Image 1: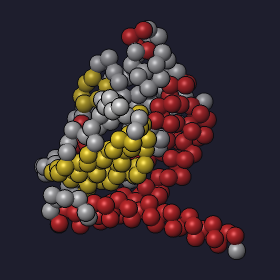
Image 2: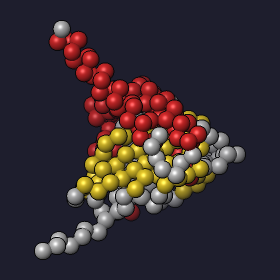
Image 3: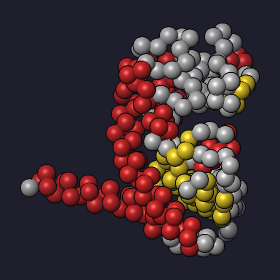
Length: 242
């Protein structure tokens, strides 16, 4: 009986998690009704794929350290058995001293992080200041916490078609310094990004497929299902009124 109740509660939570983005996008002002409906359907598909990614996402902090034991200093990817937890850019981060175009994909990207341990190379590790991007801790933080199961999210993503445009509605400049929402569409996939200030914190919502990846001419738009994320607010703080 207890298991039945627990499963029922879990199912209700999952249902709400899947429905809120689709219901919200239907209410957005200034968006044509046909796009609101299409976005709701797109978010429904993203929700189902997000449920597939969720176990890998939760396990990432535990699986990645073991996968890193099979990596060498010069490695650029995780072992094949752990490919779900790999990064779609590089095991060693997405910053680079130099960038070049991949002759196979035709896409620009950071060149491999140098093997040498210098202040300049350590400066590339913006997600764990002071560490070399190839160090165990930097790699663990990069794909075990910051970008969990991103390779799996890409494999379950939506293909881009650069013969088609990117459409957008809302307020594009939103960030941790400006509240608002921004809906984008490309090749039938939608992404809704929103922020709201909550005192010293910033609530972020990011759902659908990462249409923003089209800026980098990526072939796939990964699934993203973030309904609740709290970060520090970076905007100006209004002076208190006496």
